Image (cartoon, rainbow, N blue to C red; front, side, top):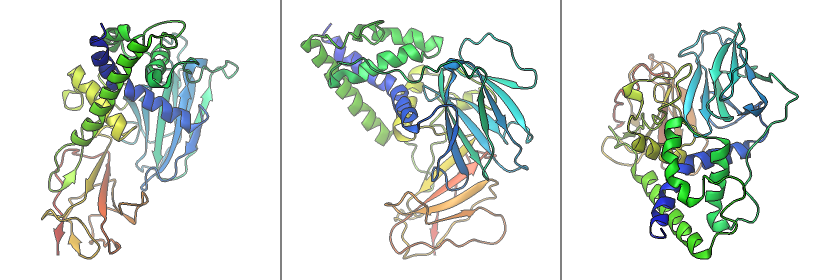
Length: 373
């Protein structure tokens, strides 16, 4: 059995990483069931986030109209699946009300609200709107205490703490039935154990085998994170399908079609882990596309010492921003208009461009190369 444990622990690391990475981000976000501003998260739209805890029952979500301007609320479950989108791409631009219900909910549905079934007790909402918006979340049963996030048992050694966190999180936020069948393979590790943690009193040799496997899993994910990106097209890197790993939960605004789902579950699990490592909480390509350009059409890095021309096609709801390597804030951001050319002023050093397209007509449209003039 000892020979099998490292291999199984390495596999469990990749499987559990998205769940734990997500829950760590939720913990850093602070209070539950309220929207908070997220300045700098998106230079084109005002962004706010809310961490849901549905253990106290359903929550009302009220969304105002925006006057026809692009907006979206992205719904992400504890496993980082994008399971719903409420916004201008798929829902009417009028005041709307939704009832967000927890797993297994069998209560009364509200006649004036659309029900969105949330796959896990914890979920994340990311709202992107053109201006400050009065989004409200209201608990149906405010007097019921919330469960919050599970805590690992005290006394577990640091070298196997990942598995203890995974044990507690799997119990609190089980995945889909298909994935529950798959995760039974990890029972020999102890991550499916109830009650007291098996890791607190585990023999040293067994713990060493688990630590060896976790190290392997970590190294494998780091390698995948640097090599799994799609090859550049005309210099642009654009992972349109990086978030197609949700195979089980399709609420309002999601697309359940072969083009947008990785039907091979092993491939989907791998893609989920890489996405959690490289771009947590990114959206499907049909909701928004983010493309990066670091080199011109001749393969040279972009620098403010030169002038460039970029002939983009008409792109509604799109902006182009320039960044330097050392500052996450854009040097400049401009909307893509079909009218006269627009000039971006850049510093003398190296820079790169980020093109963001919201609700694209064709997410896979090849972008033109940047020409030096």
